Image 1 (cartoon, rainbow, N blue to C red):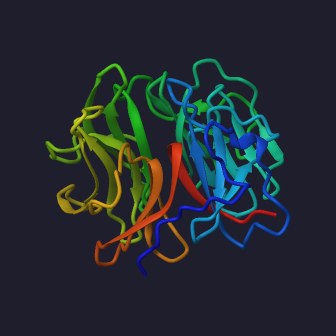
Image 2: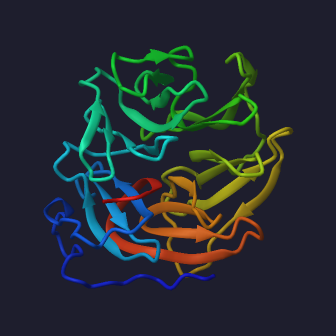
Image 3: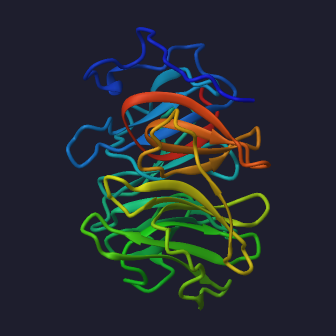
Length: 311
């Protein structure tokens, strides 16, 4: 199904410079499954700095967890049990929220955590990318303690996303930092976390922003090449999980800007979703077709996307 572009103007949606923290998800608006998107504050303060909730057809519901201390959120991941969602906060904390948006658990401030993306491992721990330490850290699901680095500090110049494959391998996207440092590749680690491929892919058109594992086991990466360039080419790239060879490229048509594509996630319909600057877009993963923009929103500094029931 091709999506219609959402341009709702209901009074509960943001307009102008209104900040969505002042908007509440009204009783009865939430559905069995909704889309959550983290919108970072942005370097110039022009983003929302909130988690925004949408229905599956693109209607905006408001800010999720507006009273839970969410600050400049980045990574977002639903617990395997489906009963809470973990948020990587821009103030060096991790929060766990229930379907009402209330805090179920949280860390205290962890100096220089600077968390990016996050995912759960087979051991039940919550793994996050630490952009200052340039490594991956693991936390118990109850978020007690300061976490433990599972890779050496400085393992990459700037971590941009990572994922754990079903066979236990870990894939880490090494991207370019805002200051221009980076090597734009993907590293592969064996299940025992020994480095198995320093350059898993050979793709001169790649500058990764996020990484995910597809249902077929392949590696997906959202890319902006060259990073930060005014004429950067933005794509989602699929690589064979065994050889690292480029399998195909997902590109939108001219109906969307697709600037700064970051968070990748598969929806309950099997489609591939990506949040970018100002929009949420979708692709049919089976045949690669671009399905359109699910929602558009000015100042959406999109970082991560998830599917989660609200109450």
